[in-house]
Amino acid sequence: MGLMLELQPSLGPVLVVGGGKVALRKARAAAEAGFAVTVVAPHIASEFEALGVRCIERPVEERDLDDAAIVFACTNDREVNRQVGAWARARRLPVVVADSPEESTAFSPAIHRDGDLVVGVATNGASPRLAQHVRDRIAAAIGTGWASRVERARRERQRGTGRVEEEAE
Image 1: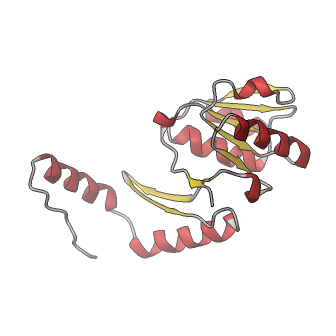
Image 2: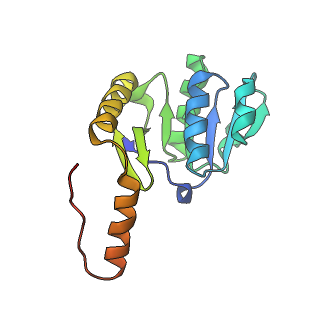
């Protein structure tokens, strides 16, 4: 079982290897969480430009991992993903190998955010689609408005009351 990562920019820069749809999802999630993201692939989809991430259009090299704190191997080439995973594991970097959960040392959960309320669902790589489905059901069940509740709870905690709002709707 790997480490489940809820992406936090304090972890450091993210390297995404791949330029397609899966890589785009990983890069978007990392960029939205405030990470510095570098994408490396021989061909990178134009949608990456809108993310404001650094794109390097060439095959990945081991040196690309030099500044990474987290690595996502998301190509459609099994051998490239295997090699990136091996490089990351040798450096003791958390790595998500998109096509091989058993080569991954970390898993990124399907995340629902409402302000600072974060709900994550993971299947340890068994089925990202199932994790997304469960996340969506949870989000629908709890509804909206949690951001303001979290903020009120934060203010109460800072005042030292320790009171946590538990109202149900």
